[in-house]
Length: 77
Image (cartoon, rainbow, N blue to C red; front, side, top):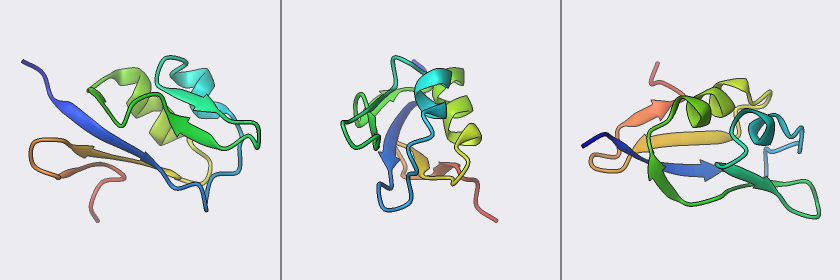
């Protein structure tokens, strides 16, 4: 069984660029105020969701391993 991630978007940081929706259309949606929301708070690890987090211009997306809480993105310094 593969890893599962907890996905969060910090809407105080999100600028509504929509890059997350472009990278992972099944993983994120934009609301009427163009704020990003994960389609689900928990999801199977995927290259698309990771690409969305890495491509966010303001790093508003946080991914952690569901089982351990270990950060996936952004990586620990």
